Every structure is written in C-alpha cells, then in structure tokens.
Length: 465
Ligand code: UD2
Ligand code: MN
Image (cartoon, rainbow, N blue to C red; front, side, top):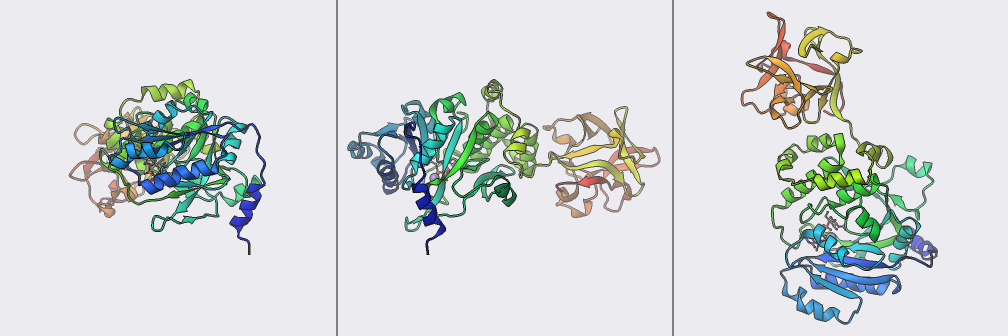
C-alpha cells in the first residue's frame, strides 16, 4: 500500500515553480557541533539544492571550543567553492551569529538552517517559490525527525502549525477542523503559522533588513522565534509552512554547548524583551502565567530602538495578531470581572469619590464593575483597590510594578486554600485581608480569619481562576 507520505511526495515532485526563482544564501550557525552532523547538513544542502539557486553556504562558527571546527574544517571545506566560513572572535549567541552571517550574505534570499539537519529531496524550490510569489512571505519547511539514537530519518505525516501557549512556550497544534473546511485547505497547501519553530526558514534578504533583522539585544538562544514571528505578522508579512519542503532535524534534550549564563534565565530575559515590545496589554498574561518572569524586568536592557522600529514600520497591535493570525489563542485579559459581592451582606464594592464603599449591588453600574487582572490588581479602569494608612483601604493609580497593591484570591491562595474567598494582600508575612467593618461602616484590612464572613468576597464572573 502506498502511504500518505509517499503519495504526497509524488504529487510534490510534479508541482511546478517559476523558472526565475531568486537564489539563496544558506546560513548555518553552530557552536561545538559534532563533525558528522555538521558535514551531513552541508552535504544535504550541496547535493539537494539546484546549483543555480544556491548562491553560497555560510557557516558561522560561534566561537566554538573544539579544535576540529577551526583549520580542519576550513581545510576540508576548501573542496566546495560555495562554502564560506566565518569564525566569530567571541561568542555571539545564535541570534547575533545569524545576523553576522546575514551581513556577509550575497544571495537574494536568506535561508537559515540549524547545524544538525538533513535537507530532503526537493526541499529548496518550494520555499523560494513562496518568497518569489510574495517577498513578505517567510517560508518554513516541515521539520521531520532525525533520531538522536541511530541518526535515521523519520518522516512525519500530520502537518501542524507552530503556536505558543502562555507564558510564551512554543508548541505544535493541528489546524482546527473548521478552519480546514472553511478555507478548503488541502495537504499540499501552505499552512499559515502563528509562530515559527525558529531554526529553518527562507526570507527575502531585503525584507529581513527592512524588519530590522532580529532584536540584537536577545542573548544566546531562545525567544528569537517569537520575536521574529510577531514582527513578521504584525508588520505586514506572513509565515507559512510549506508541506512539500521537508528537512530533518536532530532534536536533543541537552544543548551540546555551554551557556555563558544560566540557560533558563537567559531564555526568560529574552522572552521578557519580546513581551515588552510586542504584546501590548497582553503582556499581563505573560507575566500572570509566570510570575517570576517579572523579576527579569530590571535585566532586560534598553528597548528604545525596538519600540521605535515597531512605530516606524507601523506594525499592527497584538490584538490584531490574535484576531487575525491566532484566533484560537486563549487570552482573556482579566482573571475575573464584574461586581464584587459580599455574600454575607448581599452588597457590592463600589467606587465613590475615589473611595471604596459598599452599596446595593447593581451590575449595570460602571462604578461597581471591577477586573481582577493577571497581575492580581483589583482594577476599575486605571484605579486600583489598595491598602492605605494603618488599616485603611483606598484607591490608587494602578501600577503593575507595585507589589504592595496585589491581592491573592481564589486558586491563588494555594498556601492556605481556606482563604479562597478572601482578598489576601500579597507579600505580607502575616496574612492580611480585605474586610467590611460594620461599626464604622467602612472597609479595612485586618488579620485574615477563615471564619469571618465579612472577609469573604465573590466576583460576578470567574474567567481564568
Ligand atoms: C530551536 C530551533 C533553533 C532556535 C532555537 C532557539 C528548530 C529546528 N530549532 O531549538 O533554530 O531557533 O529553537 O529558539 O527550529 N547556536 C549558536 N550559538 C549559540 C547557541 C546555538 O550558533 O550560542 C547554534 C547551534 O549550534 C544550532 C542553532 O544555533 O545550530 C540552534 O540551536 P539548537 O539546535 O540548540 O536549538 P534547538 O534546535 O534546540
Ligand atoms: Mn537544533
């Protein structure tokens, strides 16, 4: 029986492309790559790319420590006139190494590859065809799997889209059935891809520079695929996976090279840079799903140029990206919303003359409508319920960086689940709760007490708690 895969291969081989395709520079960055896998990568490119489309192969050695990646490699590659090697004088990290490779490239299109891949038969033409059709299209091959045990090539046959989930983890997801049907998508059609995996893609060289390449402030590894994906989509381009182009990649659990700083922190810092520049109000979801990420904020460096670039390119909002590119992303802007009721009193919190009081519940009144934000603020527009002097409760301008106005509520009070219905001030050693005090008919903060009914509150609607 002919498999789905073999049958697709036959159809792909019959697909026509323009005869004036642009040529490409292949850019392969590596640090301490294994000899055999690097050679396999280069051979697959040289053997399986039409010579007229292959301008050059640029190997960027990101300051490897292994001796065989210096003169030995240079000597070996001399037999291939199209291969150029750039030895960086210090560790750039993969992002800046790719930029260094792009800076010396002479082809019309840049095609980036990891240093441990195998390009399959006919891999290149379908990528360049898409760029030829629209220079703002960024084309990715289907990434197949090379076993890290025996180096065999394994095909994949259900093509998926690259996506992310909060707090910005890359993942794969099949296209929803409705979307397939609605758009009459067949298995050879390019797949619109909200986020690219990162390693393997073709992009028009001029367009890459129009987009300002990568944010050069991203360090070592990680997050750059988010950055370039948001940038491409929000600033007028598209990312597609091209089913007829296939490249195998060795997925490894460990990086075979060392990180100059802590690996996890490096990636988190990169992601925080991306969030600050691209996510608009949705960056709250990023921090709200990974609270410790806020700690990276002081270390993320200057973002002026990135923000200016976004303005200059007149890029669309993140909201637009969600609505148009990734509508199935789960992204509610508040964890809970509506009136905040005291079940014991049957009354609701209300903002009157910049103070918080209790009033008869009326969900239609704007001054009784609150949002519980991802950063744990109880907000009404730009005003937040906050602890005041002594035991007073007041309102203040919301400030995401002010940890003194954050409240724990519902599932956030896991340290003491019995306080679920309470609003517990965050970060105070002695649990302190929002309470109604009947004698003076006012709100105050007071030592939390699980049995005190006047400390229990309920939002009208819980969205993500
Ligand atoms: C994925 C991407 C990878 C990159 C990465 C970071 C694929 C198949 N792979 O992880 O391309 O986007 O996510 O987000 O989509 N390298 C350097 N200098 C460094 C570190 C790495 O040159 O400081 C090289 C490395 O030798 C390799 C490439 O960059 O050729 C990507 O690194 P990886 O293979 O460790 O990343 P991977 O595949 O786990
Ligand atoms: Mn890789």
